[in-house]
Image (cartoon, helix red, strand yellow):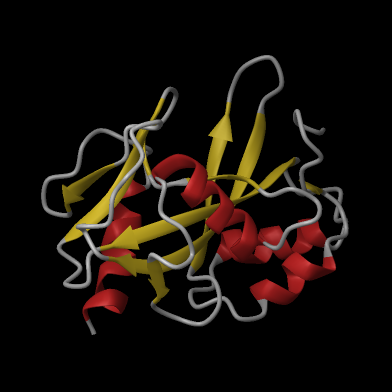
Length: 177
């Protein structure tokens, strides 16, 4: 399937990603399907494996989103390249889209939090299998203006992907504990 750079596509065998998913916090049908796809199961919807970085304020009242041309306001993230793990790819995308680096964020849990999907239409419809990582960051850390990164109150979220509200509701309690 490919992208402008060599991405991790499924079905396909990607043992590093499979290993990361062993530490997944929330397991559901999407996680099970992604694992099947990582074992080259041809019955799985073809797509790209992506990483998302869910960033919250330390009190879990705010989340960091970036302006995306197709998704409106979305969590930072993107395609994982073949030489990366989802954690490394997610942190790379975070820096590219917000200016925050791995030194500006603190992981809330060990391992990825959950798997969520984004279905893409167009000339070549496919699925983005998103592996979501959970972090907190200081709201005073300087943000890049490149992608329009902004903090939003979790109780007043802008228009974004269909799972934005449910994902925030799932992840906030982990930060607040």
